[in-house]
Image 1 (cartoon, rainbow, N blue to C red):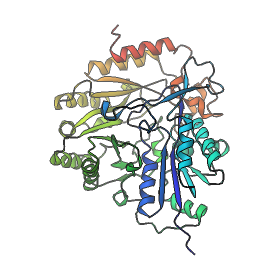
Image 2 (cartoon, one colour):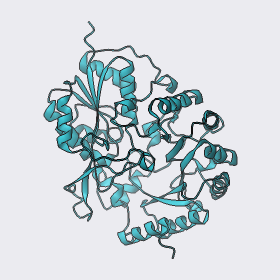
Image 3 (cartoon, rainbow, N blue to C red):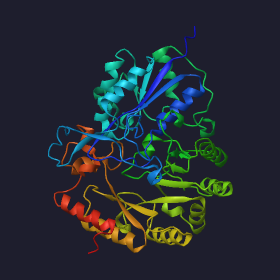
Length: 450
């Protein structure tokens, strides 16, 4: 016998870290699940512990900096093993009392779904679950997301969740709902066809100030530092028609002007995927802004593609360079050559992009990395007329570089994900100290030229 439709609560947890900032960060996977549940008639509630626009938060312009901005924060104790790091450690997000009040106002949920992001943010997950347990001690709680997928055994032992879901959860979630609530819905979408998905439930947020877009899933590359292939092993695409209709929907119904691409490989197979979409964006002529914080593939930045990106309204363009040591990058990836980078730099500048709009990510803190190599990479990017952006390396389980990270780190990475925090550069050598890190940051920012 089919029981009543369940009430399901979805929660985005706090971040615990030395630094955190909303660089267009939304729990897209969780809100995608919320959209799916709503489309199947399930009652849904949502709490975002990172909500910058909570009713009790100080007023802030949600559209400043194209939607980016600082989280609320409260200083907390440093984690065990990181006491020697001379930086403030904080809880980022709403105050604990606000979370308790929000939970108490909701109808008692039949099931709670909680996501997780960076592996080293798991203490924020733990604290969130502990607070939720205090309000709903009998409600089953399922944890999914990046930490749950990459550190599954650790999550089972230490998170406090009743159940763990790994990888994309769209298929698994309905089985878990049936398992925990005895309610079984007949699914009305194809998990392997992104065009059949409903839109993510951004309307559950207190404020929609930008919209993340996922036009494709997965990545064909297997870069040694990246877990994308492990987390999303199947490459899937949306049609250009599906994406442009979603863009129009959010723009017309919520007046959204800023859209953020979450794709790991937006420009791969550009002729079959990105270019038709860019042409439709240009034809729609909606005066929108697009941003690519996850970086685009440099080899695909032809003159035509760069021109279409510029005409479409892309105003924040990030390139996945990682290093400009082109003769010694085999330990990282094989996706770009010096000629590829020089051609791409020429093309984006010719298309009309300014230096401040285009940035090239450069990894810093890799196992065995030489300081002089980072400095040379910064100068190479600057000489090309593009802004170098330092990206601190975080060791990630299930990547090819993980064994080297274990050997190089001054911490026991395998014992606790907290030690993979990129803010402490866990794989830096003794010679790679904080003074040299600061000097490199100054050089990359342009404040130091010699």
